[in-house]
Image (cartoon, rainbow, N blue to C red; front, side, top):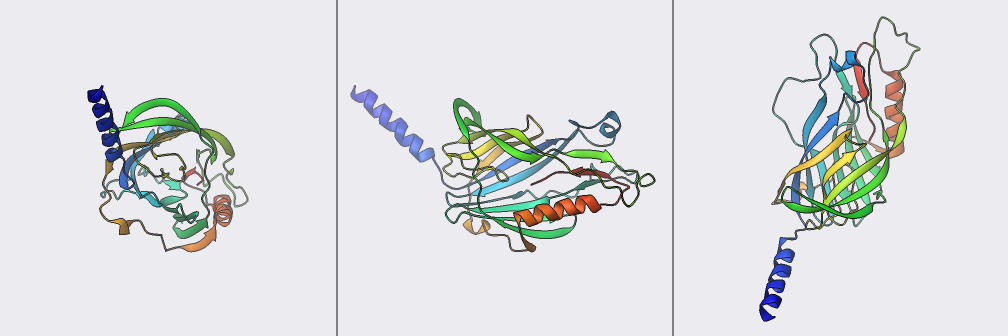
Length: 262
């Protein structure tokens, strides 16, 4: 009996030591671009857009941003006078959980914005199902979120007049499946998904439309790296959404365009 108690105590102590309140998560972010396009478009763009993102977190704040990449040919430039225009690129999102503060540095078609907002917590349903991701035991959670369905099409400059405008993407309800690690004691997660009792290490938005998968969890050795973004025109989230809508409606023709919302 004493031996069993000693073993149990060792396991509990080991579990507590394994818990951490700070760290850096590296994600592979994958967007499925062929889901809602025709065969002509599929021949012109890659099936997936894949990049790396990082989440720096403590139990009080977090910073989510892209991982810098080496110089490489742009897979979205076909070399035939067409290119892929991306709205809301180069995101950097900061959260201060205690102050209920959210700041997003975004680039919209070449213009820099600093979006000030409060933290919106999703209503998650928690499940007992588990799996291991990046060496951490994770539990499942599901929520429903509003998002803009990606819209991709060819715009022909010869057939578009100045009065014609591309359709604005529709906002729809989408299912979001998350896997979170309770051993990582922070409510942080990729992009604006957060509020679970542990850091989100995997996320599936709209059944594979966009996925995030943690490939590594590393120590956070420099806490000063988690800092508020400062650059950009200061706007509210509503003002930014209106500006994005206006730019979509006024975009010129002659390019492939992919549009997505925050």
